Each structure stands twice: as C-alpha cells, then as structure tokens.
Length: 133
Image (cartoon, rainbow, N blue to C red; front, side):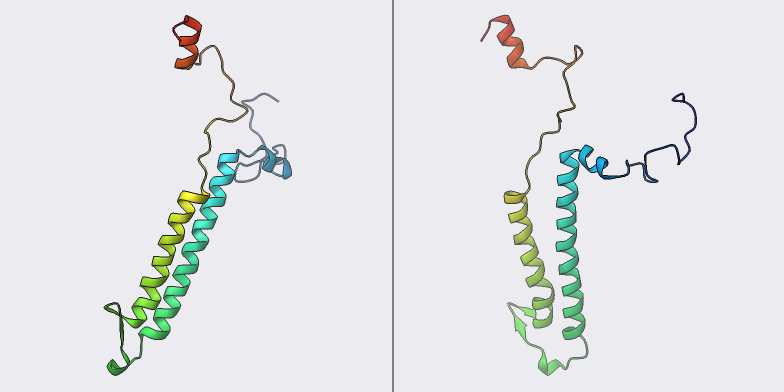
C-alpha cells in the first residue's frame, strides 16, 4: 500500500488518539515523556488533594458560625488558616522538595538519535581534530 493512500482504522496499528496500541507502545515511549507524565500526575494529585481538603474544610468550618466562635491563628481567621494557609503552605514545601530532590534533568537526546554528516561537530571534538587541544 503506498504511503499516500488513505489508511482505514482496521489497517492501522495506531489507536484513535494516534498512539500505537498494545504493550509494545510502552516500550517505545521516550523516557523523557514517561518521566514527564509521572511528574505531572504526581503534581496533579498533590494539587487535587489540597484543593479537596481546602474546599471541604472551609465549607464545614467557615460558614454558619457565630462571631463569638471566631478565633484567629497568626492574624488569620481559624477556618482560613487551617483550610487555606496551612495546606497550601505544605504544598509549597512539598513542591520545592519535589523540584529540587526528585525531578531529574533528563537529556533531550535518545539512543535513536545518531550523528549524521549534517550534524555539526562538538566544539571540543573539532579542536581535538585540529590539534589545538
């Protein structure tokens, strides 16, 4: 079948979203994409947990209160401190730890990338070839 011929979904090994179907697709996935997806899911779960906690706490303890029951923690109303300031402060600390200790800087090249004659040489390699180093 020529490349310009239309493909039917039955003939194509790709799924509806354009990714290859099956376990072979996971093996072919770029490690940078895999780690990026893992980090994004971790961040989304942290945000979702804090948001659900904040909305629940502030709804339960911020409404239908008498003025006499209102207390302050570090100049904030108690329901706001325990429902917003503390959980999002914890999220900030956890995110900083996550960014500096758990996220790794991955190279943007893979084992599939090979040098061709059109690829410019590395500066160090060029200097060694000229005998300048």
